[in-house]
Length: 213
Image (cartoon, rainbow, N blue to C red):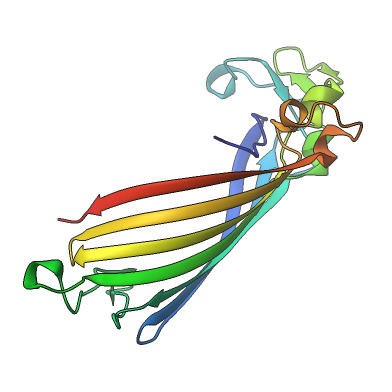
């Protein structure tokens, strides 16, 4: 389920700046990442023909280049004394100190993560629809333009069990708070606030099993 979404718009290229940090200690690790994106777009009145032509010639065309931001921070702690694996600049297997196959309890880990994604852009919310065959621009319906983007904050709490170095069972509880976005009008239909200012939340619980070969 996608709670925030810019929708399609007439883009030429993008530039992305990313920052990633991590620290590993006995039993504890911290990881964080942030990303900024700027999208270079076509402008109202532009034409697109030949190989540059759009399948649908009518596209949202911002007057300015939109910018977006997202990031997360994660903290994990091994209750059974393990250290998160890291090798050759990538996360690696966690070596289980007392695997189930040898009569141990495996490795147990608790973790929490906070993530954030902001796809709001005033340039997109005010973008007209440009016909790239004729170069004629028209005003987009407010119900469509205000539903573009959205802002999402998610909190994840996890209990993970590693029976061995190659098996992981993950139990996650997720709480997500959303402001605006394409589902706001449907989820909060009775609100008198503009679509991009309507907020709601959702909860989820998931269990996953991962096998590593």
